[in-house]
Amino acid sequence: MQQLQMNEITMVSGGCAEYCWGDFEMGALFANTLGGAVAGSFSGPMGMLGGGVGAAVAYMFDVMWTD
Image 1: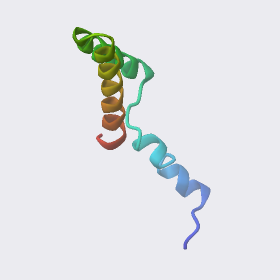
Image 2 (image 1 turned 45 degrees about the vertical axis):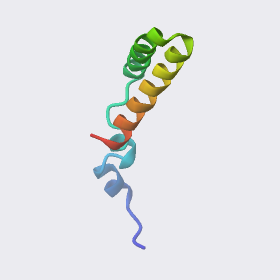
Image 3 (image 1 turned 90 degrees about the horizontal axis):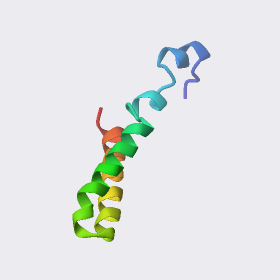
């Protein structure tokens, strides 16, 4: 296996750290979670919980696997 030199590593901007997580923002995660909870609130407390968790998971999948 070929070893990479430091300048080769910096040429790819650290690799996956930048590209695998896309544009993750804590504010966007919070906004999506809150939106899901508000939408689920019509079904009661468990609907709020399910909506919030579902929206947060969907946001994380979106950030990790689509860009």
